[in-house]
Structures are given as structure tokens and as C-alpha cells.
Amino acid sequence: MTNSKTWMCLICGWIYDEAEGAPDHGIAPNTSWEQVPMNWTCPECGARKEDFEMVEI
Image (cartoon, rainbow, N blue to C red; front, side, top):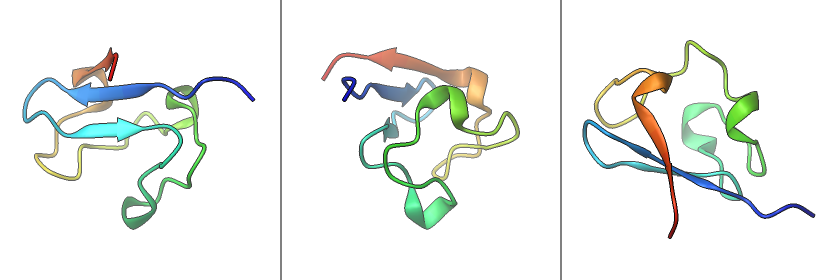
């Protein structure tokens, strides 16, 4: 298993964890960031996928 990564919304600070996914927002657990659809938006503020940056937690 590869190490999951976390991605933070640069607008509001919401964290996407690949291991947890975002099941309430249509993204299954263990979904890599690359597999998240390009038209997906931040569930907190509506920011686009390009407004996220990988972060170490």
C-alpha cells in the first residue's frame, strides 16, 4: 500500500485525506488526488481542485 497524502484548500483550509476520501461529497476512501474529478470543488468553500496544495500532516 502506498502512503496516502493530504491536500489542503488554499482558500479555506479544508483538508482532503486520500485515505479517508470525502464520502459525503462523492469521493470514496482511498481515492488518490489524481483520481478526484477535475470538476470537483471544495465542500466547504467551493474552491476548484487547482486551489488545493499537498501538505504534510
